[in-house]
Length: 130
Image 1 (spheres, rainbow, N blue to C red):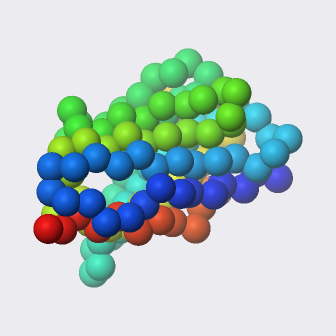
Image 2 (cartoon, helix red, strand yellow):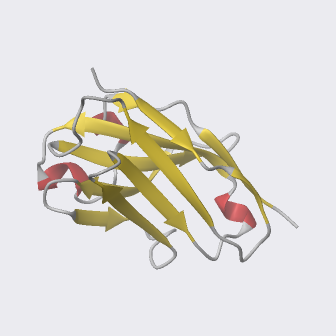
């Protein structure tokens, strides 16, 4: 059974960068999964920010992070990363990775919908502040 563990959160100054990791449980290949990164700020809904159809490599990004964040998978480490650059205070949130079985492009199309995903990590806090 797939389990996900995020790491890499922390405190960063505005304009800085962080890389989050989402490691899958041993023995479960991500090849046929669709992966997403979400974030939730206090008092706000959980927002889908990026999505990866692992087998094809196709990606989608929310407008709020497009051009600043990059999602990528590492087959050897069975891990998905979120590279975050040019961070600003509005990026402060708990970040979650999520997965659903199925390499179907439709899962990542349009708005990255949290209800399409059924496996979630525990979250990692990212705080952008001077």
